[in-house]
Image 1 (cartoon, one colour):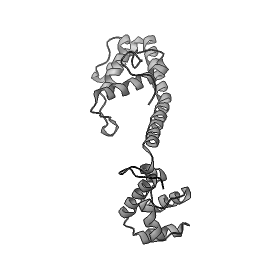
Image 2: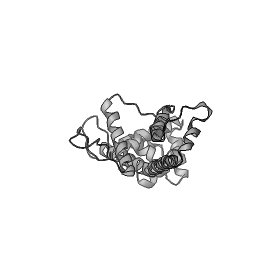
Image 3: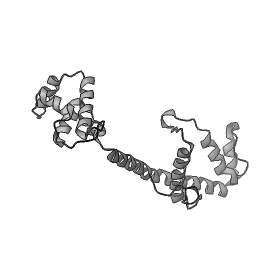
Image 4: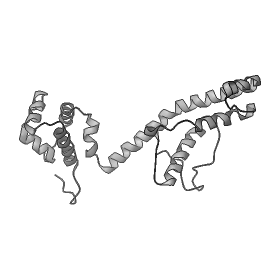
Length: 206
């Protein structure tokens, strides 16, 4: 096994730590765990489980899948701690890219419907009164419609679980610029933010 600097664990050791922690949480002894693995087609004994948890026994993919099944967790969850920092960062970036790509369709749809509502209101300005029905504070002119919608969105309640907090102000600014770039793709405008040379933030996605 490759020798690493003191304090640095191998992927096998990180995997073993994860297995041991979950097995313990499931209140399974190494013997009981070995019996369940054997029943699932992975013949091992308690000593083999001990070696796996210490990281001194390599685990094949099919074995890792069996271990995950017996422990009742996903394989991805189980091997999370076995990734190198580079692999972990790559996965985080990939997840961010996927999320941004997934946003494109709903962002485009929302932009289209906002344009449609604004266009229709300009064609039928008498409908402006509908926005003040029931005592609501509607816009005073059709040209104010989108600003009125923006104000309403700004008053939406914050969903705590979906609210990103950061202690570094430039991180919030950077995240906002990435999302604004996404908006630019769908409404044909350039907000002139996030350009290299403007504030040092380039245009690449995470």
